[in-house]
Amino acid sequence: MNLEFPIPGVFLFDLKCHEDNRGFFIKHFEKASLQRMGITFETWETFYSSSQKGVIRGMHFQEPPTDQDKLVHCMRGKILDVLLDLRKGKSYGKVFSTVLDSTVPQSLFIPKGIAHGFLSLEEDSWVSYSVSTAYDPEKDRGIHWNSFGFDWGVKEPIVSGRDQGHPAFNHYESPFTDSLRG
Image (cartoon, rainbow, N blue to C red):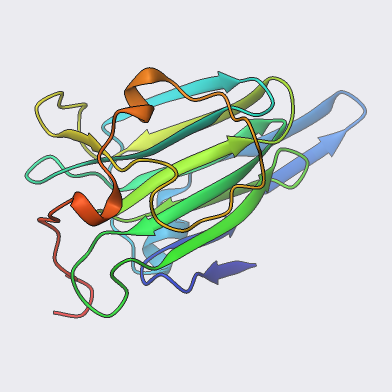
């Protein structure tokens, strides 16, 4: 099952999983599968994070010219993945969330211009990210996690000082255009 989300250009992919008496083997990236969906994605960097239950990371993105497509996968535990569309156009400001669970092998494709964050729903949740450009500290940005009307469902989240310091959504001037619509 490959689903397109209400935010244009975001896709959720089921991953190929092979299980036997030894455990399992998951292919979490296959260029041909993305190409069949019309997605051109070249991995520039790959990394992963580990988070305690109740940690919110986000809402992160990079501005042009080093803006990034992302491929996200929950390797261990469970997360509530949250997206905020920053592209000027019909879907600007649209928010969408989904649960990524390591017991259900899936990857989420997030195009440029979408702020991304997540809430760890279990202890020691591991999230893998592949991105299409290198990290650029000059263009690294964020939106305050609690400024765009989304109910995270947690009263006292664990949030970094960096993420607490991001500007509110209504104070951010977006450089992104809705390139999917022309």
